[in-house]
Image 1 (cartoon, rainbow, N blue to C red):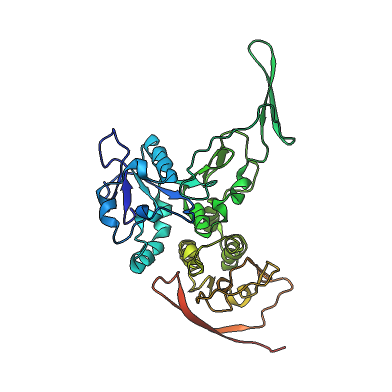
Image 2 (image 1 turned 135 degrees about the horizontal axis):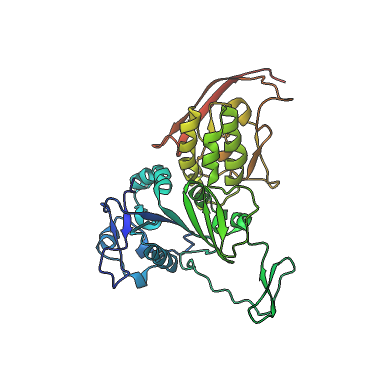
Length: 366
């Protein structure tokens, strides 16, 4: 399934890296996606708008593109991937209708991409993917991993690798702190991470780094969707949603608070296929009696967004990290309430923004 628009990296002859925006890609071709941070001053010339669309369809000079885009194009050309999807260029930014439609298709875009190129260390579109590391010679970190060997001339040699460049570092990059990037990473079948230290490969089956040091961390984030299919009960699905997805997602930064629900909507669609329960602005009707037990994890007071995001009884209504008093029912927790009715009114996409909502429950008043 192709996205609505893609950048064609073979639109012109092989001697140029120039590209253009197309809406009818060649069948059977591969496409990649770019996961990146725009930054505060993203070049307006390279954002798809109603006014720039004709020029983008005609030709984009490679030399004029932001550095992160240029690097991503080089990666695709090296891997013989003809198309790339970049959000700023493939979604019409000043069209609410196009933005809402494309945001609703995000699950299909990243799930069907052959590869996601993640510019993890870059803080804006000019940072690029590739980074030159200028480390002083002779500097050996205290926690470095040493691999000793004997050279062909008989001399002993030690090769040092920093021990802190493993997969958990991917959870602390600049890109990992952004809300949209969180679901992009989980949805992608394959991720190529460009970090400050080295290049990492991450997919639903494994993880590897340039240093070839074995990975001893927990299963990679993309494997969450594989683990989801292995779960049986609704309680197990909700446990993953609350304790693994939303608990981490709620800590991520987002430029526009109104994107708080759309930026996780693609993941919600995957859970909806498995859970078969009505979706309610970040929670589900199934298990609502205990998933309403969320609380703010950040000690400082948190102001609610000026614009309406969600009903006050949903975690999405505040800009703060959240956790749950109850992840799985049972044990010392007993159900003492009944959810009589719970509805939200979506604005377009059933998994995106909402205009209002209500819940009606019955239980003892203490």
